[in-house]
Image 1: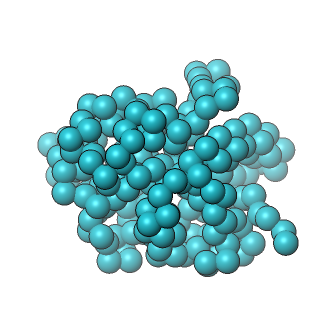
Image 2: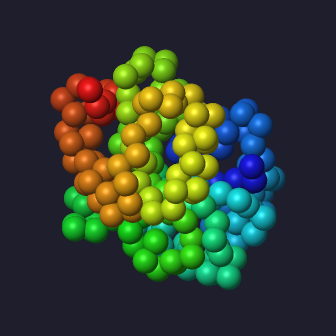
Image 3: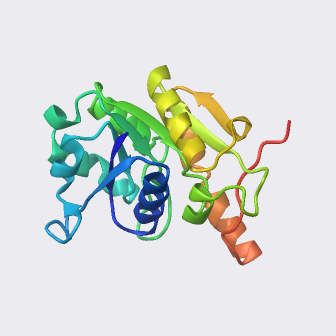
Length: 199
């Protein structure tokens, strides 16, 4: 698939590299590095993409997509792994989620929330040390969730480790698991863990 990764930090680079190794065509969009080798503006990156990965701070996702424009976004799949925090590291959108905001602002796009409950190293290599990790998926469009589930498989996620929570409103639950993530990381002294559902 043609995938536009918005963001060139650790999350965007890790996801882009792994998906590229799985045979997908990856372009990177950047607000600050556009024009450098291999870097496009966000709008340029999204123009020819089938899937958009919003590897951005959660508080920047909606404004970045607004700058790209509804005409360019169209009905593309938006894979959103972001989390939104204040400078004080509290939840930026109490009672709301980035995924819900994007879906409401751009009703034609097909938003799927996933990979937001873990460190970027787990996103792209889940079986290295966490064979029982769970990747949650939230979104309204069944076909878009199938696309994202296939991409998760390309990242190394076994099908039985992917849990579809339902509509985009369920993204509220996983986005608000962030305080638990940070409290656990402080307690363990490592981010090498993930939530796992035992059944």
